[in-house]
Image 1 (cartoon, helix red, strand yellow):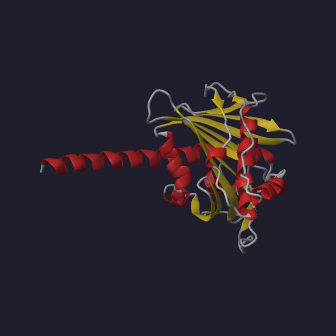
Image 2 (cartoon, helix red, strand yellow):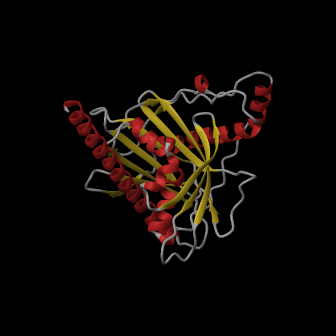
Image 3 (cartoon, helix red, strand yellow):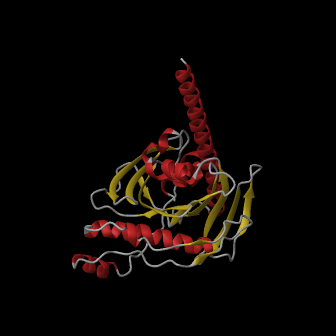
Length: 304
């Protein structure tokens, strides 16, 4: 989730949360068998997720049935690429398992605009947060801003210094490096994040997942602390009322290391979700205004 989304948002706006780091990347079960199968001319398939998702909380997301991705699975991948692909798929699957488990969710905050943040404590005392919102943009538009144009995120979110795509694995998976922006009064220092991102589309829903990863050629850099996150996910679903509105569900799952008290971290993370959503809404409004202005110019040009 996602990715540079909250990690960097917290790193700047809430300096006491800038030691975010910690969740070890997910184990990739049976990957060796799949690689061997690929070398024999087979294909790598996503495990069948054909389970009915039931969404907790007061917002009714409806029933979503996940199907496997075998029809769009790239072939001819190297072992390293298969590992990243598998990692992204597993991050999405595990994040969805957290979201669809209705037990334990409690309301953290609610905004006047209708945004609600829920939280629950996972086994091991790890607290996760789930934001529910409705945004004035289509699922495809949000996918474009949050996945396709991820390297441009720093242009509309001042809490992000840089996001760079280091590796693409097919159309739906990438490895990215993110750096948080510097701010005055920061006592911890900048963070960088090495993440795998994965997207999955099914009917009117788009799923964006992420988690920490490793890249041998891109070790932690001097002057930065390499932080980790995940599994996280963002679920974007058509609103059902307007084609230009989407239901936005964001699971934030981070295991933070350092000496920051959990009470402070647990206050900072939902605030960071709120702030990121504010920046995203502002960017969407500016884009919409720009399109309307261009449309008016085009109409005037045809009349001349």
